[in-house]
Image (cartoon, rainbow, N blue to C red; front, top):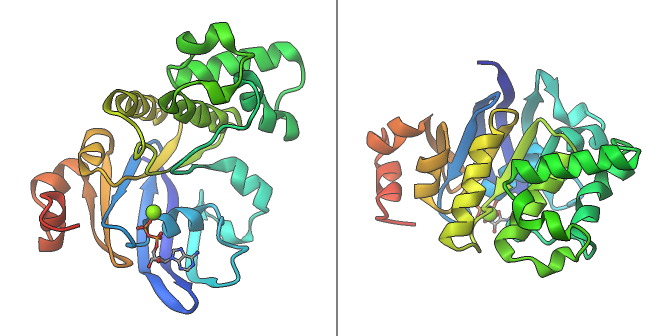
Length: 250
Ligand SMILES: Nc1ncnc2c1ncn2[C@@H]1O[C@H](COP(=O)(O)OP(=O)(O)O)[C@@H](O)[C@H]1O
Ligand SMILES: [Mg+2]
């Protein structure tokens, strides 16, 4: 398998305080890597660093390198990086416009689609990709604020797909969702990995074991362990990992 992202000796700081310490991680193309760990382990900081979301924060600094297909992301043009690495936040909120317009908004700005029939085709395709098409196809022009929280979450994933990224970052995407909505988001992720590379931060260790190929355990800014998901859950190499996945702390 092809290496998609290579993280080399990455350390991150807020106000000079180290919150991620000398991280080395390789992420393969078309795999789902889950990142688990207690609050304040640096999981979100890691995701935000992967698409340079923290660059404008004057209190933030970093050392080390991240490569996307062997190109250093810190030398890349920001717009092309964000097109290639999309991010879904914890509480995704649709834009206050129709379901249809939510999806075509960014692609129009970026000139990815021009005519109406291309837009229609794209809307249908990305909604099918997140299993939302059948639920909303008869009300594409009604407000996105009126659909359920789980549907909004999948709509926000569809919006990212519309930009056609290579990597998608998910930060605790199911933390506010009920089990049925969670299962639908998980199904979408498993389907999406055929085309995309996915990094999933989750506070739900069962979710990591259900959907991911590899799992990394972060604790207080350190990568304690990373392995194939089955192996990490069946025979963790570090005591802290075992304690965390069996719920003994966290
Ligand atoms: N914008 C910020 N400014 C200052 N400190 C921050 C900021 N964001 C996160 N931190 C701190 O960095 C550490 C890691 O946070 P975070 O990456 O959000 O961890 P996690 O997502 O694992 O909960 C925590 O101690 C948190 O308080
Ligand atoms: Mg977080």
